[in-house]
Length: 504
Image (cartoon, rainbow, N blue to C red; front, side):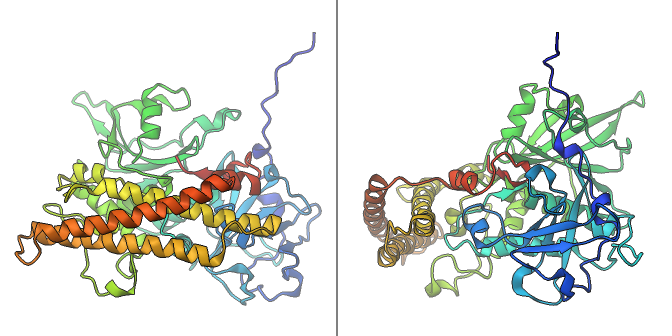
């Protein structure tokens, strides 16, 4: 009788970088090399060794519009082979790699083991075509990836948080690892991410660590289209036995709840003395990657002090402000560029800026920070959710209009109609800013701004919202609109784990 058991073979276990990069030209100082000229969005790296070399494939603007992946990242394959399971790495450029410049800061992330990577320019041992190392000592990988993240956010005209793909998040993780390695006397160790694959049993094992009670270990968790960050450390009991304590930074509680259900995917060590920060979910929308970036930056840039508290959460939110360049950017329009700097006031008020970002549940966050929630007749969070819903509808209409135009040469909405819809949203935002301004002045007990002014602002805001919602509903009933997630699947092979969007 023939066995029906499928052997434990996975393509990700086959292609590591050494065989493809050894004996090829290093990109550094060779941008203008004729043999490395980009043709049809492909750059070929030939090797002096037999059956070696690799191809670098560049993305176009459509990859960001429909696929949600920045075109500052290229994909690396064996020569003439394009199957996603054959990919051997990614290259991250600080600037547009198709700009034809003679030198662009970059780093290359290549597969080293099962779902584990190294940065070629930092940790490789192989030699290039001239017998030299690929290592570039002065390369700042962290600066490159941070610029990529900020540029992607800046390109979001609708102020909706982009979910990020696995390949983008991996670039960030390993760039952070490289920056930590350059710091002496650091009590933080960033581990390889816990990135399990059901058919590769080795990926269910955490990276081995020393039991060092003077260190904090950071371990990213990539699982089921979600990312969170685990911090653990060791404590010593009176009997000299060391035990592990875990804190998971998971703003939606998605991984936390999964671990608590005793999902066998997660090792037992992760479950011991496990607590979550913050205590309650505060994530809204598809934004786990943004919270991951901010949590990592907080833990790497700030002194770790136990226990984590509302001040810690405040600092994490400030890291998101930094990513969004929020001090320099105007949320509404040019009329209020000179608005005073507003952050969360832990005793009185919350910045109006939070209400227009689709990553943070304002009400839930304010509850964590013990802030006041009410702005007049309703809660700030209620208005926020109205805006996010409307912006998502408008954004969906915009991306589907691009899709129908490119694929079928059909416009479902004219430029004039889109401008009109955006103007309605802008009007609502202006009225909303008046609500917050008036409420703030009432809280500050200013006699010049009575409650009546607040009620007028609310009435104008409500009428603007009703008009916009009516217009969007009409379009939604007339056309079949694809979700961003569906467009992503149409553009990329959805079985490609490295292009999966982290959006839970």
